Length: 310
Ligand code: ZN
Image (cartoon, rainbow, N blue to C red; front, side, top):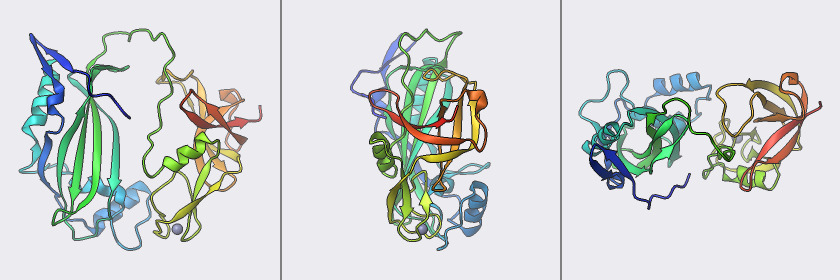
């Protein structure tokens, strides 16, 4: 998500107006040390909880990155939020933005961690948005970026975390005049090719160059054999509804509930999520044959959808 930070971001705190951009670039957390070294039991527990294969080489799955930075119920000692971050949150509280919700997280992985390694981490306040009004209320998005390092200072990954500090909406939100657009997909280095394919009206499945396994959604490497090499195959477009939900609530402004969203098993054997079209929402059934189509939601967004035989 790109936002324009050049605008001035004043917040009214009593009689005083402040500019929240002064916090950008300042530390959010300093001197964090992993509570436990990277270790096999935690890797196994995480893999069991997440339904993730235990990596054959014993290394920690990359997606465990944040786990090694967590303090558990007893917390961390000698490390915490920086004074600048506390001050920023305090000013937002004082301006009435007393509620908080985590909105999204992005991670980048440089290399896997291995048992015995102990990590350190620091975080910086990357950005503070201008005033934004959401369904929840009006407030500011605060994005922090944590760098996780191995002993000796080698960067192993980054963890970007965004919260909305907001003043809860009083009663009904103001009426929208234009229909809001659908949410944008989070496109990153690892899945950019998938969304490029969708724009070209091709649903591309990753194929591991090591073992040939097909995978969707796209991942940086193979869960089965560990290979980071891959190519793609184009989905033929036939599938069946493997499972589905009918969305009633909460009503997202870009959609008209009720509507059915299916987890479709493609003929190639991998599964993908998409709206079911052409069939009333209450006629969708598990096992129903569907056919891939592409929906141009607006000028910038194309999404895969599945047409049932209605
Ligand atoms: Zn493989």
